[in-house]
Image (cartoon, rainbow, N blue to C red; front, side):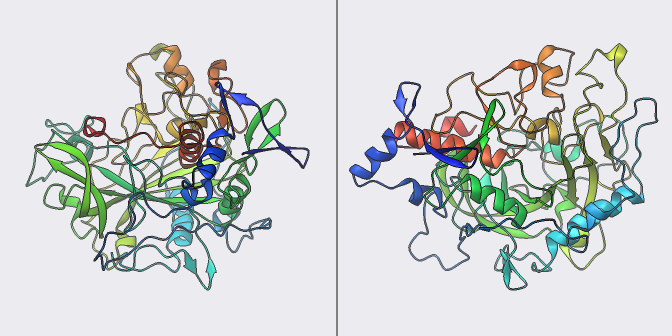
Length: 473
């Protein structure tokens, strides 16, 4: 059963939620000899390794730090020591512009991420959790429970948003602002689109927070923060860095700037007659985007997000050097349309975009930051800022969660929904506008949200939501 920590005491919670005891399914599974919460939380993949497979095999990194890593030194978290960046917002000042200062901040983060990794990011090497003889990177548990989009067995990738060809190259008539020529030579595929498969990791500061929230028995631990309840390890401490590699089923023949992109094998959904099916098989996916997020106390939200796009037109020996910065974001710009009417809208002050990037970019809603395969009607922090989960042990019920991935009218017109979606929040605040008051803040972590949702599904129903072909399209 999950634990609620109050003033350092561990209290066993036997409350009843939604008519089902929070511990009932866990106990029932154990009694019936089924898989335990511990087994399911830390299993490596949804399907396991098929007989005869000789390629790479993913192994979950969950030996989370047992003790507080403490302050991250300036020599390690160099971006925190960078005093050139300015996250303060003065609406009377001009909007921030992309320059060398922002590029250096992102480069410092990238240098940390790529340290000790394969220079070519080859499929055989994959991602190395160990760097310099110590565990550098950790994974969130409970992400190999959902059979539809959960972790595959080769590299631990999870299925995310399906992108269209327009996301990569702009509308057929060209990008809205006409900044880029589109020397596309291949497809105009728009039917099923291109699946995105992602791989996310947390450094030791993030791993410490995950481990305090998810002990090794696989059942969550929560704590009281004033009137709010949230995972016991949150907020993520200063020094936390999250990196996410995003791969696409789009090929270099279909998107020209993916030429030379690292191709990893992924046990991904098969596509038949322009429809994706639940059945999976190993197929290549191509690196298209790298997202990073760091806790930075200078930010009004406590977080700074950054995005890189793979640009195969850059003449460089390593794929790491072909990652072009797209921009930086530290808030959702609540004074910018559609959070306010157009007549009152101001240019974004909490995003700075690299408008000189050499490949097509749709960016995010009205000048906010979003990457190549992200929703162009959203933005990085607007999406992640809506990371909330039901109380520990409860499954997701219809119409009880913030509209993370969109709603009718997103970004197109001023509305209360848009005002709430593009608001700035910080842990442990509840969702904007007083909506969803019983949900727990995940401190921008959508992976932690998935973990709590999947544990709740297991706890209440004893089995995951089944995959259906229709649900993938």
